[in-house]
Structure formats: C-alpha cells, structure tokens
Length: 274
Image (cartoon, rainbow, N blue to C red; front, side, top):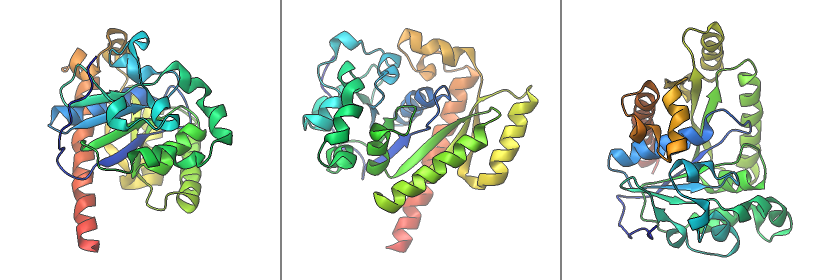
C-alpha cells in the first residue's frame, strides 16, 4: 500500500456522511459504490471508514494486517487525514481505513476532551479531494455523532422494508438535534431506497410512502436487490468494478449522477445567497 499522492483537487471539498442507525440497509455498499462512481467521473474522492467492523476497508481490498494508520489515529493521535489515507486499486479513490483499535473508540470518546468535534477538527483544513465520504457505524453513537458534526450533508440508505419510514423519522429527529446543538448547516442530501424489488408489493408500498412524506429529498434512483452487489465485497472490489453491467452497479452510477446534479444546484444556491 502506498501513501496517497498529494493533488490539488478541483475546488472546495464537500463532506458527506453515509448514515443510518439501522444495520443491513446497504450503507457500506452505498459508501463504496458512490465513492467509486464519483472517482470514475474524474472526482478526487476520499472514503473514511469510521465503522469498527471495517467493511468498507475490506470491501476495497484492504487487508487489516497491512493497516498502519487508520480513522482511529485521526481521531485520537492527531494524524493528518492525508497521512492516514492510502491509495486504493481505483484511480482517484483513497481510503482512511478502519482498524481494530476503533472498536474501543466509543468508550474512549466518552471521557475525551472535545469529543464531538474530533473528526471535524481533522477535516477542517484544505484537503486535496473534491469529496470526502464518511461510512458511519450502524448506530447513533459518538462515532456517528462525530461524522454528523463534521460533514455538510447526509446520504441516508433506506431498505425497502415494513419499518423503514419509522426508522427514517427517528433519524430525522436525531439530525435535527445535531443541527440545533453542533452543526447548524447539516442537511439531508438525499434518501436512497435500497434492496428494492419491483416484483414485491412491499417495496412499491414503501417507496410510495417514503416519497409521499419526504418528497424530492428521496433520490429518483433506487438500488435493486442484486446478487452482484452482495458478491463484490468478497473479491475486495466495488460492484462497479466487479461487474459494471449488473443492475446494481448501473443504479449506483445513476445515483452518482444525481448526487452531482444536486451538488451543482447547491453551489448555485450558495452563490446566489452570497
């Protein structure tokens, strides 16, 4: 593994968290494939694996035994993000991996000084990336709170299941609390429906309900249930690289286009407001 080459990037870095307090909703799959799709269209992207399970790291082919610096080090050892970042197999996509030390970070953060702002402090400086994407743990713990305090926006993967809307409502309340106390600029970039099966009435019902309640916040793109998406991590590859023609990979490419479109609209809005 090689340290990332310093590049100038192409402008101000945008910070996105992939977050949902529920596990098994396609959060890490979304983080990996969205990051890959953005890098494929020429963006400099950094993915930060903030989940102690480290699935984003293994899903990009990074073996735990080879990890020397990790997201733990940027939180607790004041290691610079660019020093902790390693180049992945994918051009323009770098990774700050998770490590086994991160599993104890939640306990350490409880008594740590400035505990909610550690990731923000690490990212609050010029960075050579167009996008930094943070893959959060599947819970609203202090690691996830660090991500929500640090980023501009949240991408919420939402599984098409019976309790989806209830879980999303809880997450929205948590985001509102973070906005009130720590990060007034925080917003939901979008909600992406995952594990969608158009043959299943439940998927259609969930989509209808979520779009009714959250309107344009929900991305037009839906991510289908797809065997290739499940297989790809075992080969240490994003689905977009593993099998670009599969339905899941194509959906994430469309999602990346939507993300970029919303980013352009956001930048125009900021320029108008200035």
